[in-house]
Length: 476
Image (cartoon, rainbow, N blue to C red):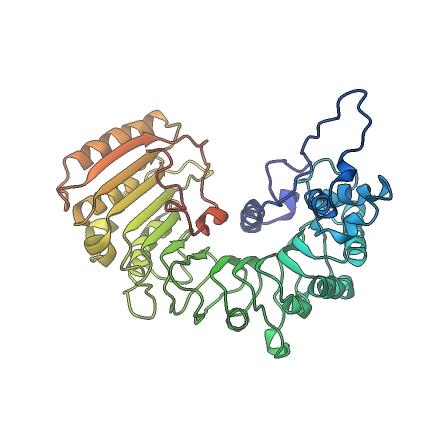
């Protein structure tokens, strides 16, 4: 039986640990549909048989129908002749999890290719063929697409392009199929403003016609995808108003030159760097989210240069497993790539196995890091696990950050006796350290999250109106 805690809903024993992690990551951060199948309705008072709703104007009734899940919206056509044409004339939110057979659970996707998956695929085809659109939101995440579905896929995107789709979420199951590419017709969806693609192989962009374009696309999310650098270059080139780019796991090594003029302040460039290698950065972005520093992109001891620095990033967030030498050794090189960072958010990630503390001396021998010495004003350290090397890093910041104004430390909610001892010793060492900044305040608090939890999510990280997109000070 598939564990309900797995967002992807796939049997874990069919996936490698790396793919299991990436798919959980992908499904956790898919945008929520604007309609819900769990909404409750109130019945009219007993004895009141008057149909007042049907007397409302057509525009208002279309608005009501557009807020219903697609199955419920279609059912309104049998209420009376008054309702018969409203469903077809109202914008439709299409979410395939709402079409699951007997689907009261709108989140439990089929674990295997089979009758349930085929039923959903057929239902999506029927809706796309029968409804004239437009589709303000379409989420297609249940189907197990294979090479035999090439024609079906092409037809879906032809219909979406013709009838108009504003936001599209499209994820294949269980993961990208070698040689099975997204239909090139996706580039005909000119109305798209937001696009989320997961577990797919991107089209061969070299063979696309000149007319292929996303003239209205403002937000692009790519996760667990197979693509080449020239594919990403092409997508950026045909997306003239793109503001937010999120790459959460390229399954092929990727070196990309970002030359889009629309990715500018105050946009945020969001990347899952464990799987992406960025060769040259050319954009101005003020906030960057990262996961584990990628050993494929950087090497311990790498010197900063104009080819691997992003001088415009002012807020940087990093997830790190301090239990591993390789990850800790990468951190100094990684920080050198962002010389102007003023706010640094570090989340210490737990590991499934209990590992002994690793006393590394890299911070004692580390070369100067420009952002730490000259720009860093705020450090938020989350989910402190009680390891010596975590405090070695905090000590390095304390003794080198000349402009530091605030250090905010959040300890995980449950500490063992040994971990508490490390925390007590570490706090004492910080208290007696030779601080580079005389005006820095230090705050300690306990995390409200369960052990292993994280409040980070891509929707918040991409929300330009948030001053604290990584909830660095949620415990404050």
